Image (cartoon, rainbow, N blue to C red; front, side, top):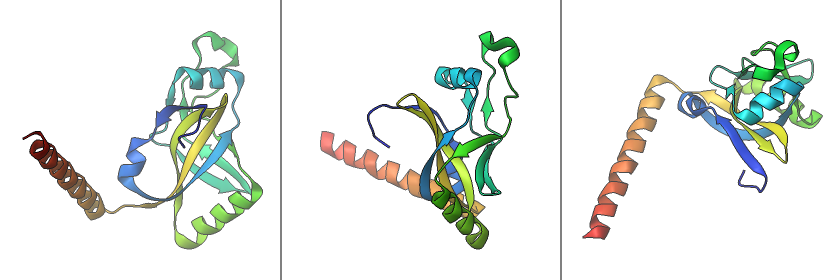
Length: 155
């Protein structure tokens, strides 16, 4: 995702903690005029959001986009269900993986690509508590090794 013209607006850090991400997909989002203004301002929260596929269409549920201050009567419900724009083949593939392998779709980040709002989705499997502990222990060990190597290089 290190492309020119990409500006990350919000990340879902909890997703990487709670889920093991298998694959990543990018989808456009259908937004109203005041919603895109709020997204560009950075008023987005992905913490409790998830994606679902219904009737051959993808939707993101629970993504909070704060109302635009100057939007008055044009503002919509901040947590409304929003349609995702993806190719039919991608949606069918994801639907099959979700139904057969017990995976879920989790929003990882929302970003602007060439002025259009895009949602990075992760095909994920939930981590168990012991997996989370193992990940944390591994991260701490790597941090300790890096610290020791840095100390040796300065001596």
